[in-house]
Image (cartoon, rainbow, N blue to C red):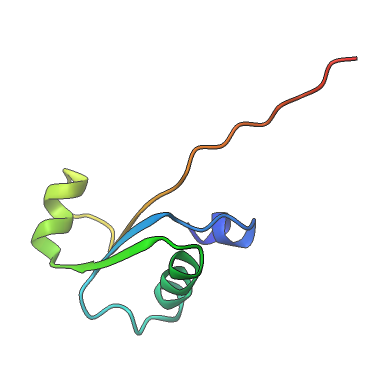
Amino acid sequence: MHKALQQGFAPKRLLYEEGRNRDPLISNLISACEKEGGRVLPVTRSLLVKVSNKDNPQTVIGAYAQFAQVFLIL
């Protein structure tokens, strides 16, 4: 997610584990998401497990808008 942010792509939805918003990397993602009008939700670890369908999920889950590149063929 941080590489996407470095390329100018902010998440549209962001779930993060409660209490982790003080982490500088996570706080940057939160700020970028909110700045772009996205929705940020602090959630419990058990909800991250359910959403990610993994027993040991990451502390952050993000969703991004789809985009397409159009190439002009001359």
